[in-house]
Amino acid sequence: MKPRKFKEIKQEYDTYYRSLLKQGKLPLRSTELGFWNAAISDEVYAAFKKLNLQKYKNFMDLGSGDGKITLIASLFCKQAEGIEIDDELHEKAIEYKRKLNIKNADFHHNDFTHHSIKDYDIIFINPDKPMERGTEEKLLKELNGKLIVHSNHFHPMHLKKETSFNVENTLISLYSR
Ligand SMILES: C[S@@+](CC[C@H](N)C(=O)[O-])C[C@H]1O[C@@H](n2cnc3c(N)ncnc32)[C@H](O)[C@@H]1O
Image (cartoon, rainbow, N blue to C red):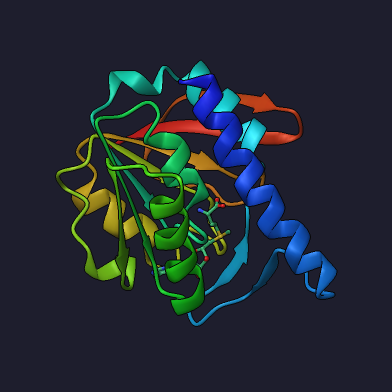
């Protein structure tokens, strides 16, 4: 929760996105293993409040991009982690964690298919590809907690859907194994 700290995170990232726009770039692009497209801060914060994210202890964002979602999750959970393949986005996440002085967030620079997710009680994904291209198989083997899917398009076929709601135009769904 911590609305004041949320505002600080949002402002820092908005400044970053504006600096990209000034260079003629958009806050979206291809990466080595997918496509980066930053989720909207207010929508994710509202979704986390609605899901009572504070019930969970250990958060993981699979494909954490610039780290914003992990830093927002750190306002709710004891520990928040993100994993991202792209060098520049991973560095950005570390930069903002330090700048915002957030101690309970950590970032891994790796392919998430090689990182065990068994010990996290809440997983987040804003998928950049259909889940049947390997991600769902991993979730079916390793998901011990719940999964938040931030997507209008890509959803798991074999996990159990617990709830689903829209925040503005984005569909948020909660799954378990
Ligand atoms: C749609 S973006 C989501 C970024 C962030 N979670 C958000 O919601 O703002 C998806 C990210 O997943 C990363 N990604 C895709 N496949 C990956 C993999 N196997 N391992 C690590 N990162 C991956 C991409 O590089 C991209 O930054």
